[in-house]
Image (tube, rainbow, N blue to C red; front, side, top):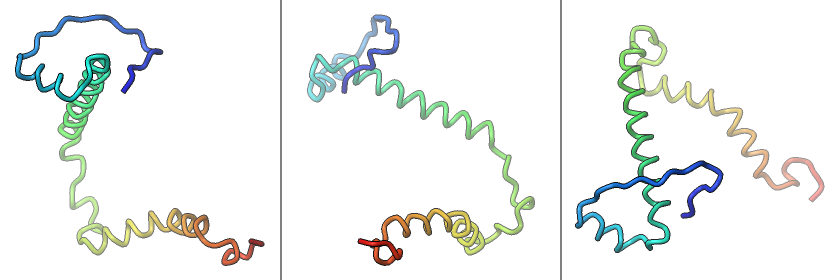
Length: 104
């Protein structure tokens, strides 16, 4: 879990509860601590940003605007149509060369 060396860094001081530091020390070697903390902060910020985006977009989808997606079956059909070309291509790529009419 190495830190990215291509990003500028700055040393900061943080205060942690002793019990939390003990837990961290129990699972993360001290030489990897900074990288672990960077990753934890990045993950937490991503969750917070996602929650903010979801809150901001609340109400953007109204059922009455999409009557063709009123049932689970309709949604399943839409997804199948959307995924169909990708599924077909995946099948082609995974098929035996002989099944595709190619020489083995």
